[in-house]
Length: 277
Ligand code: PLP
Image 1 (cartoon, rainbow, N blue to C red):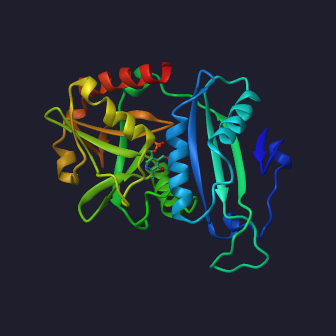
Image 2 (image 1 turned 90 degrees about the vertical axis):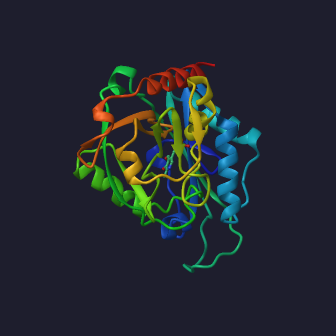
């Protein structure tokens, strides 16, 4: 079952116009929201980010927060899975002709729910590999846009290299991953790229930032370089579907001799607590 423009219908019955600007231009925004034990996790924060994305591209939010909650909860209840990932997308809507500029249209709203199978702590403790690449994306990465061509190409490279993630750098500064935020740990300080147009401000990133103190870590939103990563005590990526994942091999080179710092374990435990609250 999926949600499309006011209706809950079977996925194979859901269709949109070929004139939809989401189809023609990738003219839309999206959110991915986890559900744990049937409870939507950090909904307010996701809806706020959605609002920011919509405002940035001049689409009026079609629903109030109350209505979003109602729809998402209802969709969630169609599935028997207690942990799910809700994907929601809003495009500018369908026009009568293809043109780059836009008039006010009726936005298209599509939502689907998929099972969310988080990795266990022991699965994560194995450590993961990543590669680095130049950040070739545009300069409004803070908008969670459905125009994801660069990210798609990175994801394909990750697949071809059999690595978990591609870590991006712009002007010698690490920005984020192709589908995640990036943290390094050095001498009990956690560093992450400053919030701004170079990164998507992750909801999981915010949780890591606010949990730093609980794990006795300092936090600095300061740019860091590839060289800094190579000398770091830990490298982590974060996202709603991956949670907090340790990267132990970057471009084939071990980080912290391939060992996972105990601070990661503290963070992991803290995050699980938040999920269960
Ligand atoms: N950065 C990018 C480019 C992403 O695509 C994602 C998630 O999809 C994130 C960061 C992490 O965001 P969140 O923690 O809200 O899932």
